[in-house]
Length: 302
Ligand code: HMG
Ligand code: MG
Image: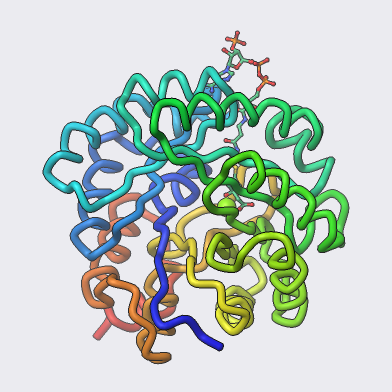
């Protein structure tokens, strides 16, 4: 049955912007994050402490997080998180005063190699000290698993493989495991079956759905996840995004579309629809890109 409320994790400033070809000024990123918080978001993924050679768009991670941590005092209710794939990234994030980080693995060997340059087993060995050191600093760690409903290189992925990587991250100390349909190839029955298998090992309240909308299935897949009791949803305003290591992958499901869906289902999420639609309209114009939220387009063209 559906959860009474859902926690939204806004990935727009990170997942949404990481693949934008033209440089986006740090000030624009900060204004986006501020507007997202103004629309009611309480958890915003703001940056990635990854190699600037691999993901140039996230090269200003320090500037972004430092500014937010100063402002963070003004918005104590908002969590600003960052990706930290290794100890180097974590060290820099801790220096900025970050309170939450995320490690990111994959259920596909090929994707793991392309995305983070190591095997699944090596990635878990790398993440363990990251989680340990973060926890010692009082910093919460989220875990991502990519390719949970398909891989751009390997095709179908066995749900048992997703469960095994998810379990490893959870047992390592990740408070939540976010299941990434990186290339958006999932369909609802597969999504439902996946959650069923993964939640045998991990309590459902510690799972999040991170669905990309490449094939237009994300909302349908979210319905399936909600029906299984998943109560944390990752999304990006205006459907921003794509993964640099998943060719052809388009953005996350649009936050506006998720909020419209949740409102219709009577599920509280704390984000205001009109306000988030205005943010989506603003950022799309600011970076000269089409608004990929159907709800956002409908609301802003009235
Ligand atoms: P590597 O090459 O194996 O690492 O990269 P290395 O330790 O050999 O270092 C190589 C160079 O990178 C060195 O620089 C390091 O200093 C530098 P050089 O000596 O050549 O000048 N370096 C770093 N620089 C800054 N910050 C760091 C860092 N670490 C090393 N933390 C690494 C390994 C993971 C760093 C690399 O592969 C990388 O940066 N990959 C980018 C991965 C990424 O950001 N992908 C997109 C995010 S994941 C995603 O979108 C999926 C998700 O949304 C869920 C879903 O949808 O499925 C989460
Ligand atoms: Mg993603």
